[in-house]
Length: 96
Image (cartoon, rainbow, N blue to C red):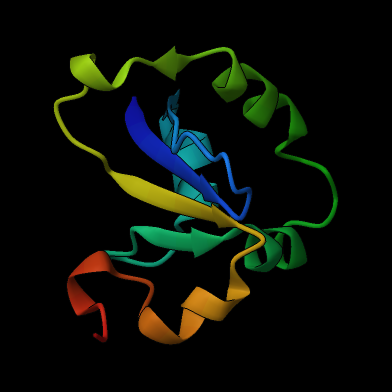
């Protein structure tokens, strides 16, 4: 299981983290070393709804931040303006 942090554009966003199985994690972050994704890109790539059941399971697996050993990926919602800072969709390549 991998930990994914959800970052959305809501003013009251909590930046919750969830556990995703390997199949869902690889569907969200398909490139080698990728740990950033934008939901809009994901939905464009996987538009057939094939991951709906996997997402449903993930939403049930919220992880309290105190129990997290590390974040494996970040999934951005409604924040396409941040895409310019992650040209390679890797947190380590953040353009400041």
